[in-house]
Length: 97
Image (cartoon, rainbow, N blue to C red; front, side):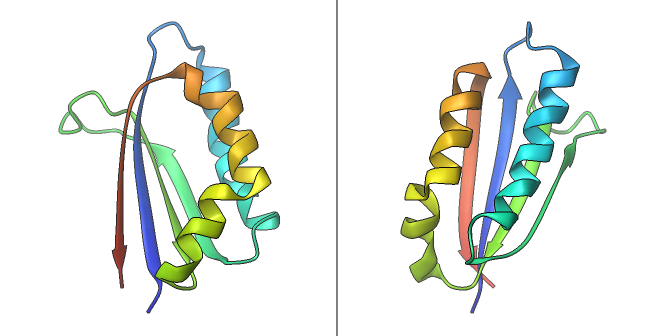
């Protein structure tokens, strides 16, 4: 079974749209650096049902056993170092599919 990792993000209000798009591209680029990523998608929310979470991404890993290696991978850590200070809030959900 694969592991589906879903992240919803509220950027801080002062974060420019161009930086938000850069984060989206960088999420998708993780697939080029982390071998256990099967697929990745990301995008900006366009409905009013998100309670302020304006961006989301989905990363599918080969198995739930890959989650710790994904979380600690240098590319993922670099992403967090760069963007986590720009987030007002984050929700993450992981499930097997």
